[in-house]
Image (tube, rainbow, N blue to C red; front, side, top):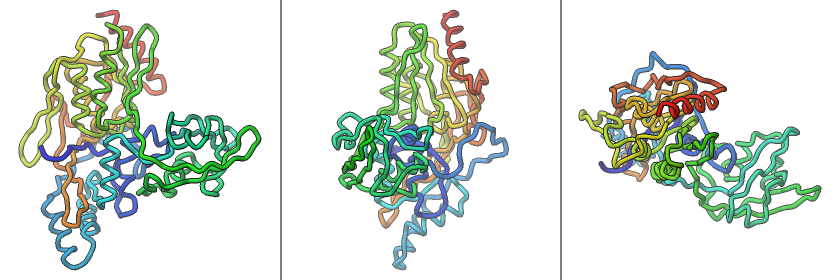
Length: 397
């Protein structure tokens, strides 16, 4: 199949200016709160079912391409013309990007972003404090240290600003609408350190995002948290399973995971299944199937944690493990985004990411507008409930 297949990560927003925020926040949602990454735009995820939702019809790529071609012939913007067609369709998951924006999008799917390599938090008195610096990253090389208070960015005071807005300033995108400043551009940080005022000039760089994190749990179990399905995520999940102690249970935490590349979700599923069906989807009037590959670990206890921010590829993975009887799903109903997008290059070099179909779980359940209902409902006590369920699965093994 040509090109990549994407389960779009956040609803699109009509109008030009916000193209990067359409999807990047889903890819990098967790990092956006702690580093200089694109942040979410559009509607916030929720855990209430959208029972009345109907999948939007797939857009005709030919119609979008023709609109762009006619506009270019008239000396107008093909990108804007294509955006108008997409906007009128009512499909909130399709989007149009100019060439540079699409390059940023594909880099985000590769698990990279432009930033300075810091984490930050809001203190009780309203200040912004640096909580971490990426080892060997731009900020660390410039002498920024954890514990420094960020006073200003390029001379602009940041006290009282939301942390996400401050991160936008650091990446050179103060309005959160993209695109960000290019790698190699500089930003001046005004800092307070132990009562002394400092100034550090930091050169932005292209940095990598770790989409998978592993932490120990009581009883030798492991928590494997997956923030997004960027390139290489599936292999990281499989490696985390292999590295866990023999027989130890795993809590696969997909809360807040906005989705990403379908192929990576299938690879992650392969870590827990011994082949077999992962999902089906229709495209261009034909049905297609996605299968797990290789021999995964089918024995160790497995619980999947989900919430209203679990979307797209993360829902595909959850549905597969639930339908195949491989995992107990704990948490709240997932978002309900089950459409698939593929890219179409337009005459002026811009790219339209258009909905081409909708997937179903191995049992034939549609996800779009419905979400996935967990086996065990849980809210604020989800992690505790997950550990309880995991313990029960271990006892029964």
